[in-house]
Amino acid sequence: MDNNQSAMLLPINHLHMHDPQAKQVTLSLKVPKGFKPLQSMSQPSTLLEFIPKDEDPFKWSQILTVSPYMGQQIQAANYVSLLSQRLCLKAGASVIQKLSTHKYDLYDIAEAALTYTSDGRKEVIYLRVYAGPIDSVALQYTVVVKEQESAQTALKRAQTQLGAISSLINAKMVNGEWVSNQ
Image 1 (cartoon, rainbow, N blue to C red):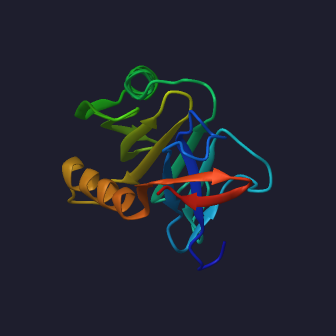
Image 2: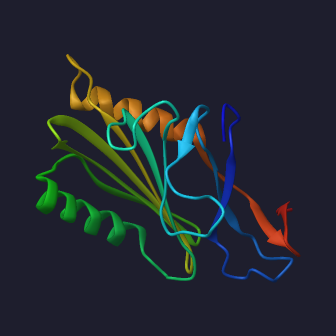
């Protein structure tokens, strides 16, 4: 994955996967240039993490976490709420952006942000979950808060980065190939 930017297409609204007339929504995610995976990319996984290629897996400055949930009917708001509660309990996190949800057609998006301290450094995690009737994808972009930086400024960095690498597209898989919806 060196300096090339890898892309993933992840299903969000694939309710009628085999119907050529079905409108499907897909999440296009480009792994940031210069990032490396922490897990093997050769096997399907429910958790993929990426950090800057020259950083230690235990002492990164930023990390992208992708959790695809195919066929599990997970609601976006429930996932974000549950993860936020766990972070608050286990890591002493505090909310800096409350849970918000947006409904579009047959899918919804939920997001929130929290800050916490881990190994003596302050981190901000920005959560965004896309969920359709069957499939969903959870994205987390976490950054270490720099010296003299506020949690809100760090959050803006995380949101900007996630916004730059992810987008919803109108595409579906037909006979093993991704095609644009008409």
